Structure formats: structure tokens, C-alpha cells
Length: 465
Image (cartoon, rainbow, N blue to C red; front, side, top):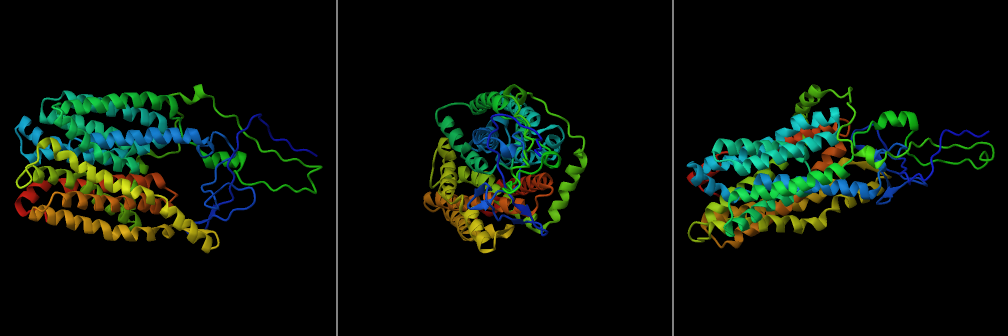
């Protein structure tokens, strides 16, 4: 007897896996069986549905294209956020305010950047990621063009908050959060070329408009009810064929057709009426009470506060004064040290996964979230040492190379924390991941905001070290 549930021609390869969660949160059984798709020799998790429309089943080129768009958007958002740091003294003169007040044009948008998640994350759970991303890019562009045309401090602050809030949709996109720290370098070179600070916002606005068009065409809606579809179609696990019964019985998995390209371009999505908008935002605050999540939030906030605010605030003031006497146009060169630190850490990106995979094999295929943490040990030593180097260089007016070495060391260690500590938190708490990410975005930006607020007043009164 043949049982035929459905069939479609030209069905692409669908990922299969027998991985599953164990009873203890953060523990996953990754033992692979014959026919499973694997990574580092282990079964893939989470397990997708037998459906080509499941984002986990999308072709690699589709995933890579979306990754590139999100990366570029995050890069532009962070470059717009911290890039104008070399303009702090210029804004102070233009608007007739103190340097401390001028630095608030970086600090408060930084706070809005994180708090955007409080609205945008519950919203994309409700109406879909694609419409929220497109709307956030529109807000980002509007804020940028507004910032470029402002003639008052209050107007510029409002426009900066708007574009920062909009780009907060991708506030947890890590690698380009790091690369966005090179923004002051571009701003400094534009300043050296005699261009106004307004042109910096015009340039980012132009790139953002092009990126919006690319996102509209290529970024497909990724909201997917995997559990519901698994109940209908089943999970994508390897199928065992009983050869003794194959002559009388045939099993075929129902495979829905892939959505057409035109269908993926709809700017709207279905409304998830089961997603609680307000409770998602409210429950996120409970994650501040979870020790490992708070640890991740604290490390994030500290290193963002150092890399995006502290160094970008203090270096321009120190380097233009005696004994260095650099020009204001070169005050953004500290971004070179930021970039060097991050780029030197990039070759170690896979060390966490490789160590976790090696330890998982020794543990009979059982993955525990803590298995990736030992790779943080070098960063725990290098980053604080870099902070000491920077502080002593500034306090004693040592050679300018000390600033660059200290910043590079701190950001080398920060890259480890940005990538591996978040992976640890995600592995530990997969049930309500969106709520945890809201808490992380709120917490890290609040901590970094606190580190930057009135920082210049403090430094000018008691010194850098």
C-alpha cells in the first residue's frame, strides 16, 4: 500500500537534523545520525520544518544577502551614531554651548539607539520583521536628512534621536557595531578636506537610501511559525527507510512550494495575533534579574561606553592640546586604533564555536552553553591592560602611540565579549530570546550612556587616569 501525502517537482535540498534540547535549559543533544546535515561534525540546531519557506531552509545566497544588508544597515547606524565625535568642539562653538553639552549630541542618541528595541522588537513580533525594518530605515533616513539641515542645538538633538531610534532595529548586530566605530575616521578626513559636518550626514543619507532599495528587493519576511508548521508537516529529521517494507509502503513528506519572488516583495506581513505586544516589552525587564544575562549586559555596556564614547570624547581634547598639538582634522584618527583592534580579533571569530564543538564531542554529543566561555580568558587580561595603557598615556602626556595601543587592546578584547558572551546568553535562554535581546539593548545602551554623560566635566576636573 502506498501512502502519498504530497509532491512537488524541483524541490531544493532541505536541511535535516536529529538535534534536540535536553531537560536542562542551555543543554542540547547534537549527536548526528546518518543523513543529518552537520556543522563541525555535529547535528544542526534549531531543527527546521520540512518547508522551503522556513528561513532555516532558505538557500545560502538568500541568507548571505540578508546578512549583508543587515550588516551594512548596522554599520551605517553606528557610523551615524558615533561618527560625528570629531565635531563636538565645532558644535560647541557653532551653537554657543560647552563641550560637555555638545557631547550630549552623542550620548542621548546612543541611549535612544538602545531604547528603540523596546518598541521595535515587540512590533516586529506582531507585524513582521520586513515591515519594521523598512519603516525603521525610513525613520533613519528622515533623521539623517533632518540632522543635515538643522541650525539649532535642539533641532539637531531631535533629528539625531530620530535616526538613532530608527537604526536601533539592529542594535545587536555585533560585527558592524564594531566597524561602525570607524565613523570618526571618515568624519575627521571630511573635516580635514574642508567639508562641513552637514556633509557627513548627507553621505550617510545617500548610502541609506540605496540600502533601502536593496532591502526592499532582497530582504524577505522571516517571521515564521515553525512550531505550527512542524505540527502539520513534521520536523526536518532524517528519514529511516525500512527496506523490508519498502515494496509495500512508501512515505513521502508534504513539501509546500517556495513562495514566488513577487510574493516575497510585499512590504507588509501577516499580523501575529498571539504575540503579546505590551507583555513582551514588560517581561523583558525580568531578564535584568538573571545573573548571566546581566553579566552580558554589563560587559556590553562597559565596552560600548569605552569604545564609542570615552575614547572618542577624551582623545580629541587631549591630542589637540600641548604637547601633541594635532589639528582638529586629525582628531578622528583614534578610529584607526578601533579598527586595528577589531580586525586583529576577527581571525579568532570561530574559536568559540570550535572549542564548544570539541568539548561537545568529548561530552558524548551534549552541548552546554558554558563550553564556549574559556576563549574569553585572553580578553579578560588584554582589555583591562589596554585601559591602563590609555589612562597612563593621557595622564602623563606620553607618546601618542600609547593612545592607539591602549584603544586597540581594549577593542581587541571587546570583540570577544561582543561575539561570544551574546552567543552564551542565546544558548542559555532560547525560549524567550526576543525579550532577552530587548533587555540587553536597553541595559547596554543605558550603561554606556551613563559612562558618557558628564564624562568631559569629570575628566577636566580630576584627570583621565
